[in-house]
Length: 282
Image (cartoon, rainbow, N blue to C red; front, side, top):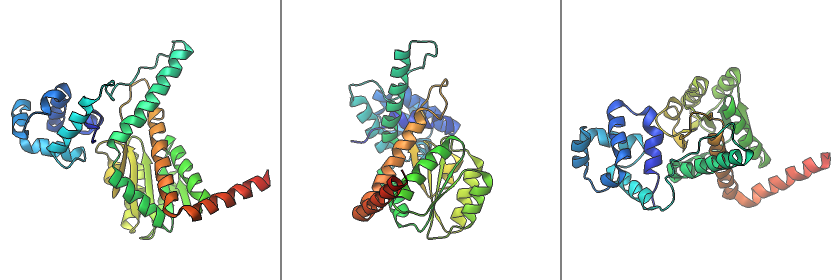
């Protein structure tokens, strides 16, 4: 069952154009009402054009208003708390509350990401990386940690994988890619200029480009051919390197296992070979 309407709307709010944001806020305030409305009726009640609602659905990567309504209905049919509810972290509270809040938010971030992560885009990304001659990962700061995790995993199964963590590395790696390669840009904010420029350069050279960013319209996603999104709902007290990092790592694990299962026997042999090599050193 399609879900994620509420998460998608909340996540996309900061990046929506004014009129799209207006109708999105109307929907969020009255989701149970909207699921029973036609696009014409909603346009009249929200005081926007039907075209604005269509553009909003496109911004959410939905096929149309009907898909948005189906996702909202699925969200509302659940008996548990809304997926948009994150707990505020009390800095001065007891350690038990700190454990509960952070663990809850990490789990919530993964759940929300499952609602906005496209299975079709995952399949495209996995196939492109599986077939690639070389995979280059672009990430700066906390996103560089995510990139290094994927590099370590892919190297273990014998993939030629490089990581660009600084401006010179990013541009140099991008300049040497071609149609046989994949460039993967990681940026929680979606606005990291060096990652945007590197993805664009890689794409100009013929490489397949993939992004992993927060949900919504952003420069990094626009620079890539295939977009993978994570939930971007976080309380202001917490930085993007906390719950969002857990969600990104979860996507990385999905990609890795997706690639591994494409040629399971060969990849398992590579894992066993590297395990023995490391064990021999210890």
